[in-house]
Image (tube, rainbow, N blue to C red; front, side, top):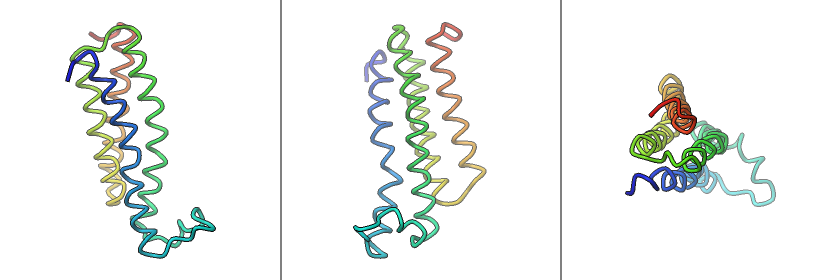
Length: 133
């Protein structure tokens, strides 16, 4: 992966990862019988792990927006080198871990992985603002 395009590739991967927890929700909906007339009303009927997966999915949209802003800041300032690529990959790892820990109901590690992802975003913004090289 070219280090100058690495953060952009990670941005695309992050967009795909938003739907990782949703796949768990979709499988659980099929197991309990999908209600096409009221799909959102099904959430309380799903097992607890599937409810947590739905919440992880929703949180993924929130973290994606700020990650996208950080990546675009890095790319627009021409600072998308190896460090930015490394932080972008670390963000992806943190988000996968976050989803797994959320679905598995391990709140301490879920919070740590969320915090790790936020630190990666802060690092990307610091690179873009010439605060870290």
